[in-house]
Image (cartoon, rainbow, N blue to C red; front, side):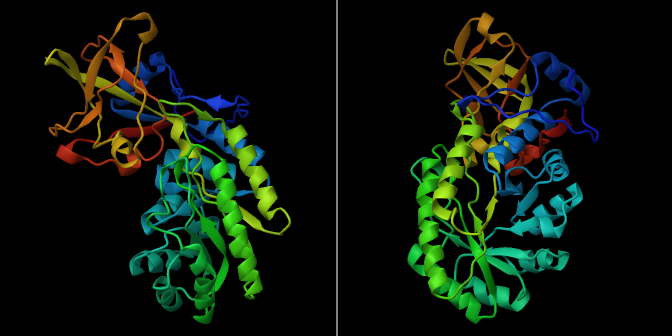
Length: 395
């Protein structure tokens, strides 16, 4: 049976394969034991898998400081091992800051990356000692000048991407022509702009998109220098992809390509480089154990009801636009059939999949779902009064 974590640490060497596919962090035998002990639905976070990803990024991106994006999964089972490994953390709210503080992080290990903050968000984080913030528009400047005048600022840039699943510059980020004028306006208000940040978009499948964004950032950096603004920090955000029903480049291959782009664009400057991986760090380090609680035949198609769904851990299917692979015990040795798998709520739209082939499942049978660590429990709810999946950490 999988060992439930206390405070021990282990690591595993980074994979050197070109691609990585979705793999569960527990076997079916372990899943049965854990479900019997803790119930289901159950999210299982593997410290070994998390450290594997963290070390792979560190080795392939030497010199980069990593600030894990807590928005992807602020659970202590993710935050505490990363804190113990020496990682820093990216937060977007006071709630995320409190979760990070509870896991051991101190304010000097944090950066606040929400470009448009409420006054309460800003002042609460500032009062706790957080001193690195982000902005992307002129209306944020008076707010920062009034409530946090001595902070260090990063200007977030809008960048384009051709391979990202979600465009994160559609809502935030300063356009290239506006970047230096915004820095000058912030300086005129008495604020200190220390650097720039960007985000190529969520689930960015091609590292070449970083190359284009970094070239844009370098152009703006040089214009800022010509305007007398001395920048020190470049934050390339997140976007590193995770394997779902499709494989993606391994972290080693992906990050080495990114490292080359960083060298080509900023290698001649004494720049502090920051990365904010979220999904790429934690997604494939967590698996879901869920149980079949109902079964019926509707219009000739078998429907299975499981004890987790779109309002719970599968919320990423709605908000994050990803499709999760559902694994059944010994599926390779059993005939598989078209079916529908639906969640436990009374909402008819709570359907997990209509496309995957599965064996003839019995009520009470377990399914294991890999790559459930990012934007799953973080965006889940207890709609219908149903409990959200419990999360535990294993070695």
